[in-house]
Length: 186
Image (cartoon, rainbow, N blue to C red; front, side, top):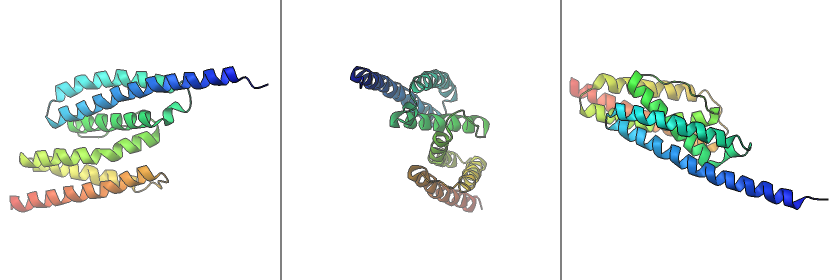
């Protein structure tokens, strides 16, 4: 005989946990945006403080996602993690000049890293305005390397493929910016 009471409880429990996951995902998403905004304003100390916060929030989010195998596939979780990846990578690039590996699912990492060039373009434009040509060139070179690495993959997921294709346009913007800066220098 089917135990409908057990089924109802399972579905209600999942829905309750999912609602908590969505709320916690929003917290991670908000902190990611604050980190990126602080970095754009050259407030690295403030961004570092936010990094400490986001690591705690992400740990709590990851813990929640372990309640059910379906949780890590929830859209809110996926978006929060990819934004987390983007913010952490952006922070490390601006602070240390390099990208780092993060302990997240590979598809979430790729989605986050594919969003990074958009922020790097914004940073390059800002740096170009300050006359920091060498830093702009470093950003262009990093995006070029990133794009080259991502082209080696055979992405079946449309979302990832679309984001990786978008990097091509960010790279073109950076190449044009570097060319303009070099022409102005001469």
